[in-house]
Image 1 (cartoon, rainbow, N blue to C red):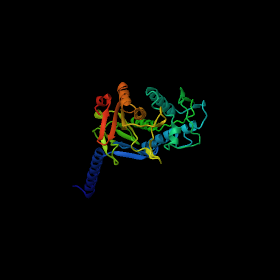
Image 2: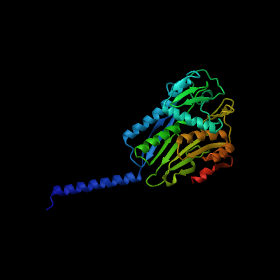
Image 3: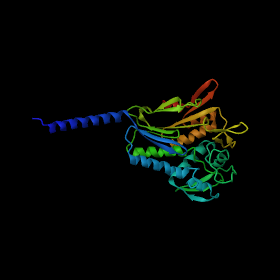
Image 4: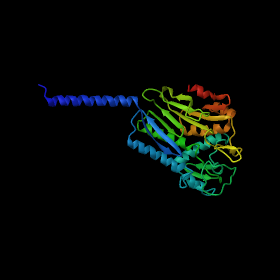
Amino acid sequence: MITRFTISKIIALVVGLLCLLIAFNYNTKNSFSINGTAYGTSWSVTSSEFIADHHHKNIIKIINNIDMVASNYKSDSEVSVINDNAVTTEFVISEHLYKILTIAKEVHNQSDGLYDITLGKLSSKMGFSPDFNDDLSHTSNNKFLLQNPNKLTKNTKDWFDLSSIAKGYSVQLIHEYLLENNLNDHLIDIGGEVIINGSIHGESWKVGIQDPSSFIDKPIYVINNLDNKFLSIATSGEYRNFKILDDGKKITHTINPETLSSISSKVSSVTVVHESSATYADAYATAFNVMGETKAINFANENDIAVMLTFTNEEGTNLKFSKKWYDLKL
């Protein structure tokens, strides 16, 4: 004979199983996301897998650590302290800064100097970065010496400005942290510097590239990672980061190292897709933005880099791609 106690146990078991089924269905149809603000922008990490609180805290630590390495807005950051010190001073720098500067110098050399992270004073003078002293002099000798292990000697009075590479480096660090903790399916975004890896419930991730001619969030192109592969995506453009001076002249935040003034280009935005590094993608996007259409496409084809250029005129928006973009089937 079945007692009331037995019936209640059966009911409790059934309810428990139903709760597990509901939770399973929820987790297979929904994603988990954490987000915040940093570097003057927003960041987010999205995954089909649960992101535990300790992972959330560790990701914030990564973001904050790089902020204290690369921020020009913090007077006590590593790069700000270096900027304030005399030329020929030798510094023992962090491993993070050493890696950032190594990649920056590589892209600088590849681009014949069109990618330059030592234009911080000019950016400050134009109002696109903070000013911590009154010395805004500029030298054409934009060089620094790196020595392993982790030594830096400045050979210029200019300031380092790592805004074109630090976000990509942070995204890359977060990606590596997630892989180390078996969170393989993820999308990371810091101010438009993006990594997609794995899948979202078996489907490829999709990332929309903003239409520079639109004042609302509107994608002009959608990238997805077929076969669930790693892709880093970086976009650079002047369509939202510019100033109109009193005389009506428009200046933009990206500076051409050859002219030492804002770039003037028909290209509205540049999107780079890299198969291994968000740090390189971030730096290349700025370099291509400085180069303009012809140099950018030629450089991308010569160096096997996937790039999309966006042009906006009265007739609408047009796109142009490098050969690698087609090879990746983006």
